[in-house]
Amino acid sequence: MDTLVAVMNIIGGLVLCVGILAAIPAVGKSMEKLGKFLGGFQVIIGIIALVLGLLNLGNIGGIILLLVGIILLTGVFYVIPALGKWLEKAGKFLGGFQTIIGIIALILGILGLAGTI
Image (tube, rainbow, N blue to C red; front, top):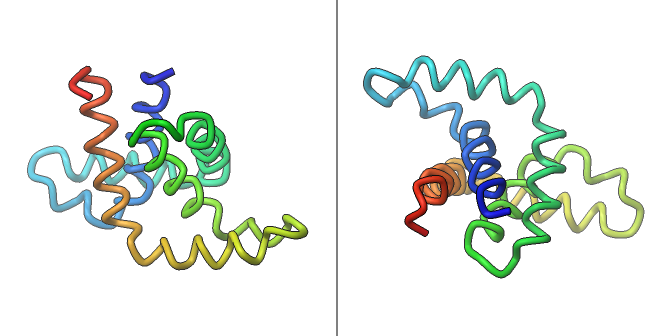
């Protein structure tokens, strides 16, 4: 399960950091293209990230994945009857930290796949 959390952190981090990926030397343009492509699946990635984050709240990767899921799903939370407005407000607040959370998710995902955390 930890590998899946790491992979989802990388995918979610790429989507959240798409605006700054081009600044990375040598591979930035390719990563930006990948991030834009994955952005087309934002809702699906957000749902998977939210569920995996909730299932893995005991580690830092799961917590960051939960935040990634909330940010990615901000635009669709309004359809949830009781919690929708609260979740949408939380998502908009976290959206201000989107790039920072994306960078943290990318780093944690890479470290998780490498087996160092």
